[in-house]
Amino acid sequence: MNAMLERPRPEEFGANSWLVEEMYERFREDPASVGPTWQEFFSDFKPAGTPKADSTAEIVRPVVAPTAQPVATSPGVEPPAPRVVLATEIIPDPPAEPLRGVSAAIATNMEKSLTVPTATSFRNVPAKLLEVNRKVMNNYRARVGQGKVSFTHIIGYAIVRAIADNVPNMKNGYTVDADGKPMLQKHSHVNIGLAVDVDKGKGQRTLVVPVLRNADTLDFAGFLLAYDEIIRKVRSNKLTVEDFQGANVSLTNPGTIGTVQSVPRLMPGQGVIVGVGSIDYPAEFQGSDERSLVRLGVSKVVTVTSTYDHRIIQGAESGMFLKYVHELLIGEHNFYHDVFRSLGVPY
Image (cartoon, rainbow, N blue to C red; front, top):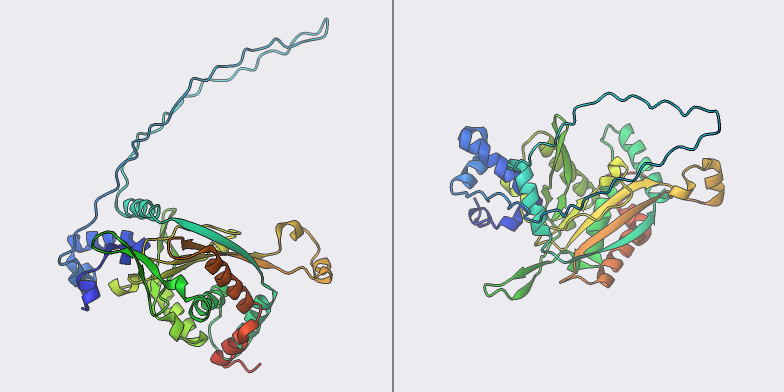
């Protein structure tokens, strides 16, 4: 196992630390239930403690019931008889219970994220060309027996290219030296964490953030294959320790469930987390006839947000980053030409 796994830093797991805790519980019960890399990793692993309970008490003020006023009636008219309501048992709320396992680790991560001073930039990007070109790609790939390209594939690749080609500081991180002095940690490549929602059954959902390493060295076809391989490992529960370490930027796409825009939490050690919203017409046009929208030239849009570490990244850099993503998604800088060429699409 390489040196990074011998002495892993807690922040390298970021939002995935809950999964490490869960795998550790499985290892304690049966070491053979986890893979060889996990067994070696857990040989000297010490789990983190659960977060402290919030000691802030809620201030409760007495509520004064309003005085009942008599109902005015016309002369000779009997007031309505009172409605009889059967008494029902009021069930009190159960006592608070401690967070354990996954829930405790997620709470700890969210507390850690509060130590990062962030700011967020927003940009609405017209999605017409994105939709049209994705349809062209998928029509061709269907004819040759290949899988579909998703919007997240294309937008994720545009994010990688914008960082690698235009605003490289977005992939750097903040750290401190042994004396606690602030330091800038520069990174040579874009290691992008991909937030994946996992259904655990019984109404429970959780989040894993595996890392696609050296994404800036890949063309679109290579990025597509690497992305799909990570998702396959998530679905088949085949992720290893290495898959969770080293993210310096992250991508989350709540737009797949209809969220218009979001301001996600940035984990320590990363430069930026990008949120992608749903692709739809602006709200004021969503009830309009589509033929009228075509005549008016109204396009669907997607909102892209950049939540960044303000200690090392300034607002102008975040704005330039989103501007370049915008330009790529509307076809500038030969973006779709390069994508089509890497996929072998003959158009």
